[in-house]
Image (cartoon, rainbow, N blue to C red):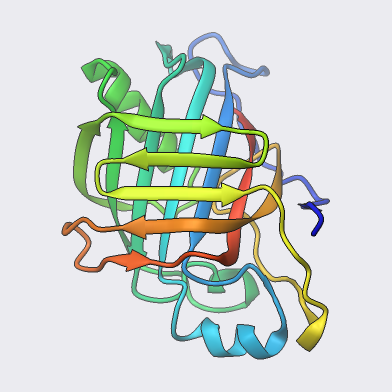
Length: 219
């Protein structure tokens, strides 16, 4: 077992917020998992590409900073996303998924902070979060532990182990990158990836998969 590091940092990070032109206004942690492997062999990838990977959980936890002038220190937002095709297949020449999202915002947030959290998640999901069909203020647990990141909110649970095994069979390699704009990211193992809500017309539980990313953001 060893940690797999995404060697190429994603680009395109934008500075936002009042008075933040040319600088960073908000920083925090991010984690996601989808219902398809991100590191696997071509044989498994070919089998999954057209049949699975249509669902994902995405979570942002703000450490400090503001988005468009609204302070968001310590607040979190989590998205449960379902698409009509594999959400990542656009990276390797496939079509872009049409998605719908159930969004969960920190219950401690004010109305202005809720609006800012929604706008931040939508802007930095790179099109993955589009049509929002449910918006739920709720208690969100986001624990960044030494060995794992654990997120829970209402009808979802996400646990990403910070270690990933590299199976050399079938030409295993990394196929995808994180959905969100990040400074840098690492691949992880989804020990829990569960959504039991009704808003998306689908539910899932897809544990023990090499299907997660975690990292940091600065927007």
